[in-house]
Amino acid sequence: MLIPATILTGFLGSGKTTLLKRVLSEAHGQKIAVIENEFGEENIDNDILVLESQEQIIQMSNGCVCCTIREDLRTTLTELAEKKRKGELDFDRVVIETTGLADPGPVAQTFFMDDQIAESYLLDSILTLVDAKHAAQQLNDRQEARRQVGFADQLFISKTDLVTPESLDALQHRLKHMNPRAPQKAVHFGEVSIDEVFDLKGFNLNAKLDIDPDFLSDNDHAHHEHGEHCDHPSHQHAAHAQEHAHHEHGEHCDHPSHETGHHHHHDDDVKSFVFKSNRAFDPAKLEDFLGAIVNIYGPKMLRYKGVLNMKGTDRKVIFQGVHQLMGSDLGPQWGKDEVKNNKMVFIGIDLPRDIFLQGLEQCLV
Image (cartoon, rainbow, N blue to C red):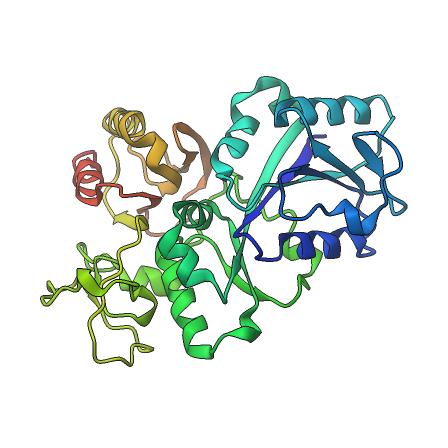
């Protein structure tokens, strides 16, 4: 049995530690091993346990295990799996808490690139905590914060009680356009039920492509991209130097919660876009094209996924990737009355949308 692993990331002060404590102390009967980068804002074990020993791995009374990374992640994961095999430690799953400034990409890649790790672990999902009160500022100022949003399979928004409903709505709208794949949930002091944290299967190759339906309906125009010219209050920039007087047709977003008369331009570098088509892909062309873009833009491609209609098979083809690592698989058969179509979502930093969309268009049969 592979050990499921969850990556917990999020803005500084967004409540990762609070959420973890809650998850660790809840009586769910799961034994969890927590791996913490010790450069964290506050160490979880200060409160939960008093460290008497110099041991790196501490077993807690409810069976959870905590360890602080002093070497690299690979070594720690290998060591934990080894101890579990030998029966020295008993745990069901692993949670890796990254520091507030970390990029979860390389952490996620460890699970795919490293054969030894891949034999023991299964990456389940990346959870990102967003601090509602400071989010606008942090998203404007810090690319790490924007990347963490782009990587997420699930977004938890903390401190929502400290902001107005309007600014929460604005934040959610902004997050959705950075990452339409990840469901958003407001959490109060880390109170979140365990089934919203674990076994989310964010990296499973499954035939379900979860994209927020509002986002899809917004994206029905071929050339409509939020963030390009958008009047939504969440896109207000600290400096209003980038205001655009003109709006191109279809690229301008009238969100109902937009109540100000000013046009503000806020262009996040982490964006997402969707490719849809009812025509089948030519497998060889698509493989060449995807290979080429991953080669060139891989470092800027955070997460991407698609459910594809490929010429020559009556089964759905599912593909997904993180940075340069891409995997695909045959999924279930298309249903009798199901419309065979292609649906792909790309989330990344300053990706050249037109190159992607035109290139994909040219791979269709």
